[in-house]
Image (cartoon, rainbow, N blue to C red; front, top):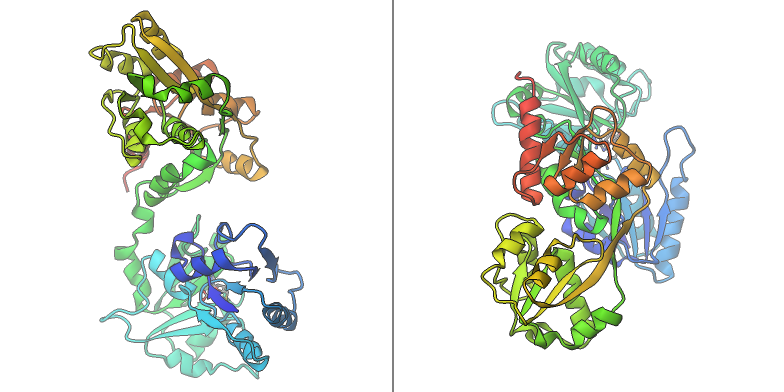
Length: 498
Ligand code: SAH
């Protein structure tokens, strides 16, 4: 049995231990405030149970959760109890640990990054500071300060010599502030509220202790939010970093296949964008039969092998492996890659491409292949079923004995409801191939009015044009780096200088 903290919401703030345990659990009992995708790494077939409470709705009673944990653990299951933030900071993790101890169940506690520290940090507020705060207190705002039997000593809190961090205080904020001032805290002291800290759409407001409640109301700030009271709140002015990232505030839709989206998504997130994955396509490998099977059977005989995408490299090697072969079977061939991504995929498999054109289009590869003798020789082009025929045609014309085989097909991926909703909010929509344009539009979805359209290169832009989309930004280098660079430059250019 494991009591595990999942951190404040940014999936990157989950600990290594939490991910290990999620991946190996038989059962996971989780709350509402866990990061998106936190359970993605769970085993297929793991028993995933929601035991949190919806605002307003009845919670699964704490006793029931405790009983369930004990029951599953006694049944010999590896159980993860996954909680937002840190399990022992206002998460009732202490009570759960007591229940486990009382039942004689062995357990481990995995601390998490707590919201009070993390939301503050993402807002540019250090909870302690050598000049501004030598102590910090975590306080529940759940209790009504006017209640006679409040377990909190509000006068002592008002006198606390350091930063006060309130959890669960948003609804009672006016009374909390009032009570602190009544206890002697300076109403002019800086205060900050951070809503959805570390998550997409994080918002922060800073005011004085006397003014913060009205400010929060005016801005419509809601839960989950952390309230900070103390001189450190003022440091946000200098330290705020999140809002200064180049793509902060942008919502970027990524239409490429889900399996390929992660690198682009990670780059965009690092620059501060909110990324919505709206995959329009999926890669479907062709069965190893017919022409493809024949080509593999005589793979040693090719004097030139051309691969036209990283997917092609992966599937060519998968097909080789399925046929009981490996990289040595192409040892005698000259290997050509259409661009740097394809060359990198080859390098991962121990093959250094002999020919890589500078520009990442079929015409450039045709040109780069000019010095390579092909007349009367056996040449293999391994590509996507729907790829353009520029390269095979040119090689045939030069007298090559050409085998032109399809390794995979790009097919439409139906857009989920969540993807559609995400696309609606996009400020940028990225297209990394003609097929992403075609399949997105054929699915009936359209980039929203006003969203900037970003294309990886001229071929993709032309397809966009044919479908009635005006491309606002076209990458100069036709790869992921080039696309990210062009998008970022466009966003910067559109920023109104402060
Ligand atoms: N165990 C959690 C806290 C649970 S109590 C932790 O250590 O963070 C729930 C309260 O935590 C919320 O009412 C809110 O005050 C705070 N909280 C949780 N996630 C938050 C987030 N991403 N941003 C701001 N506050 C958050």
